[in-house]
Length: 265
Image (cartoon, rainbow, N blue to C red):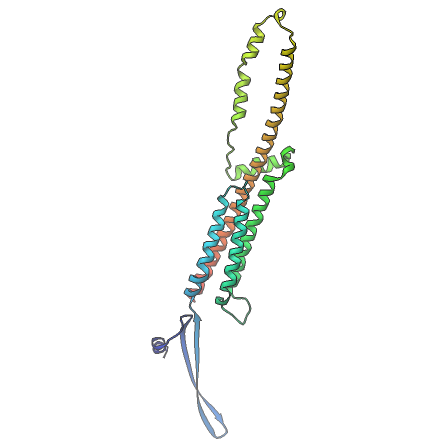
């Protein structure tokens, strides 16, 4: 009966006939006997409709959200891109709401899947907001990086994620200048003390040079502080991205295992 029904069944493609079970019994009603035949028709939804229309587009959006981590974190393009992605995903859920299966037991499993995907996107946006706050806070330009941040982030976490610090060309230049005497120093050592000229123009030039040196020292210190905070932001961004990718991979493996168990039933 099941094979013949599957051969002649015409459906819209959403439902699939699993099996038809029958049972014959006799109902006694007084002196009369009635033959009763009971049929159980077991059907299930075809998953290909929801895979093509819902799960695959949602997976593409999640992949784009993962690839958005490769945008530079010091720009606002990443946060605006993630916000646009969340808005597009919300519109996608509103459009596809009619295709979601309705069950009597509450929210279907595929609805929970979409809710978790949206939660992952929101967590990704919060991570971007945190990194942007670290990199673009104005007061951090003149504030030293705390010692515990240097120890925890720039040493321990940097070694944990194998973060390599780029070489500072200014530091190398200062080292080279510190090892080799400048021409002015060489001239000063060669000129006797009795021949030193005390000219007002030279004193003014010397004062201007000292002011320029102090101003450049302040700028160099500000750049050094900004570089330190940038390294802290980059290290936290790499760490949170890897944690996010690890959790998302585990979630995908759980969904695949549940799918395989459902298909084998």
